[in-house]
Amino acid sequence: MDKYLSPESTAAIAGGVLTHFIFNRFEPHRPLIWLFLFFVPPFAVAYGLHLPYTSVPLLALKHLTALTLSVVLYRISPLHPLAHIPGPISLKISNFAIAYHSVRGKRNVYMEKLHRRYGKIVRMGSDQISFADAEAAKILMGNKGLPRAVGYATAETLDTPGSIMTSYAAFYPNPTKVHAERRARWALAFTSKAIRETDQFLLPRIASLMTKIGEQKGPIDLGRWFGYFTFDFMGDLFFDGGFDMLNDQDADGLWKIIEDFAPAIASLFYLPWLTPILLALPGAKDAPVQKFFDFSIKCVDKRLAKGNKIQDVTYYIAGQHIEDEDKPKPPRNVIDSDVQTGIVGGSDTTASALSNTVFCLLMNEDKLKKLRKEIDGIYHGEGVDLNDSARLAELPYLNACINETLRVFPPVQTRISRGVPRGYGGVHVGGVYLPENTSMDFPPRVIHRDPEYFSPYPDSWIPERWLANADSTFDQPFVHNLEGFMPFSVGPANCVGRNLAMREMRLVLAQLVYKYDVKPEQPDLKVFEKEWLDGLEDHQILLKGPLKVILTPRSAASN
Ligand code: HEM
Image 1 (cartoon, rainbow, N blue to C red):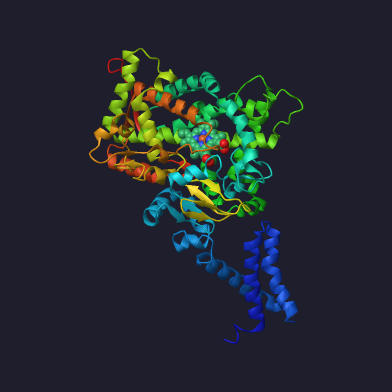
Image 2: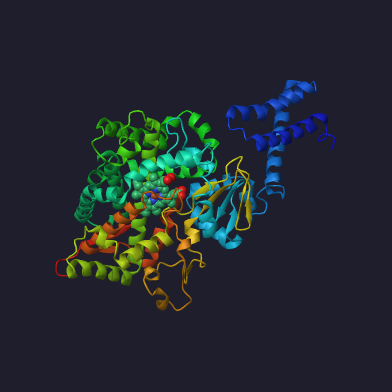
């Protein structure tokens, strides 16, 4: 006992608790300050108590143990400001646990389980909660809501400060203003007229996709082809072309790079302090994310060299539309980070939605037939060109299939995030108090499958629930509350590419279903389903296993 209560032990333990207090109160972010706080106190104790310096390692061990224990006990204690939010102890102790689930890619399934157990609000980290409540989401992401969580600092490197995503994050002094400026430029690129004009790239890309998939011999991974298509289209949209994955099938291995960095980026979101440390390590320059940055910087170089004659998305986000010489234009690093956000955010999401829609149709042959009947009907009955986006937008069953996929398998599965900024003073919502520095995820997948918003069979893919008079087709009380549908998020920072994505998906699905008979390579649907669901990995980017299908061109007779 004496040993533990010796003056040096008492001083080391007090130092550990004091260090915890300093971390908690001032949140120092610089690794040098941490090193100072970890290792200087043991030296100070040795010096103050006239102990030999050989005692420092043991003192350091006691200091760090006391610090760790103090942190852990505080985080699970009733004194913690998030103590009123239920959740498993393993998650309360540290953000490492949720970061681990993010690396594994099963955060979606895990969060779903936790919400079923604990309710709409779950503590999932020392300063993190998951909030599966549509009303709260609407308030907290609305016009007077909160900015994005500090986790977006992960994307802040010297090369990429402040994309449209990160500019709206809680660590900026005035995120609302900074984001509104960025968003205004982006919005110009996504007006209805601008979207219509993208048909000049979109339609040839879809034609190429349809031809290429038809040319392949044997079963194909259709999800991969959707990825090539959406990526090429983003190249057209941002860089006046130049990506050619449909032709070279990703000879540069760019999809692989994105798949490689997704788990790391997803988990670092919960540990933003770790990013600068990792970036300082030797070899960081070879990290997959750095390769992606290098690639996109070269693309921006080439695009900017072409000047302001091309009115693509980069034209607006680079401020090439600003004629007044005196008005400031976005700096190059902002253009780079905006472009990076756009090409990943616009390609992976749409490819995921397309792949999941095809998967669901393959699992439900009757619904695939129904969709085909609708498409054949307008093509043969009305002579509608299947490039006519406006007409496709009116098709009830096509839209029902897409919406139902976005509901059951939203491409952004569990993390639309917001944070209460430091110094903001905390917020009250739906009877819950969220102190400052709280980060929260709104998980679309969990909200969309809540029977309070969609019922009956909220986990099942039933496009009929989106049709007029749907209530009469169900044998149980019918709920269809669009407040609980947010695949593109809500509020001033919702998805700017929503209408374009819907246009892409309608065109691709209509033409695919019209032109090809699609069957899963795996004849046993139970196995096919299991393999597909097991292969879905939620790393914010939704990674997918192969969607192996056999395509047969529909003969003129069967059309
Ligand atoms: C099915 C396809 C898509 C889905 C499900 C989707 C979903 C989302 C979600 C959930 C957000 C986060 C919003 C928030 O934090 O509140 C977002 C933001 C964003 N998306 Fe999409 N997206 C899709 C396609 C696209 C496309 C095609 C583009 C265009 C290139 C795009 C560009 C963006 C941008 C720039 C933001 C940031 C908006 C802002 O901060 O103001 N997305 N998207």
